[in-house]
Length: 317
Image (cartoon, rainbow, N blue to C red; front, top):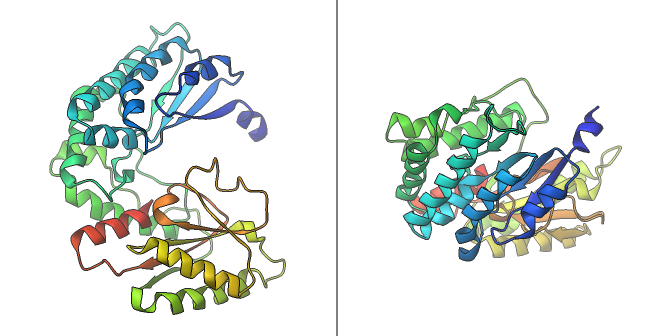
């Protein structure tokens, strides 16, 4: 049954200027289409995005628009007028769909979590602008709040809840804005192995990462049965991302462990069929999933407010 359901779902990437997107949705034999919205859409793509949204009226699929907050923040950085046009286009498709007046009885979901915006490059004011636009133009009757995160184990959910609360306290100045950033329940019934987070500083990073790699490779790949290399991702976070990744790769070479640098433009976290450990920067791996993940957080920039926000953002995503 699970396999049959998955075969009825297709996933597409929207670049804004992709004129074939609507055609792909119309041509798909699947009844459910998930449209992923990247956070690095070009200015031209942002300008065309309202047109793409309007064209969804002509499709006959159930559509799931994921990560719309990324597009809205990029649009805000390009001007409030553009962001307003996008939000109004979202409001239009929500008003027409999901009602008995829709002859095809379609359902369109728009998923937006402001806490998952890229905190690296935007001020608190920008997030408030995104929240206020949504509150001003989207019908409240169409809003639903998801307060539980069942994607991760209880221990990771508790860690994420703490980071999310820190972010929320920075921008949720009114009850309305707070409603758009609901607090996450800190834990639930899904349990797994205890997560390990290594925290270090630039002065000690290289020695720490070597110790971590030796410990992890001995424990995971020396077990019976051993974990496959491709089951593991080692994620680094911090101000000196490129330097830290080079240190990590050097440590893996010493241990004779093959690795592949993860690129955010890859179609999936397990797209590569070769049996290698995945290596990546926290900024390039939001929402990626692997059976086993080791995170090493460099706190070199922790002394500044912007540095703390960036570190927490990378860890949260």
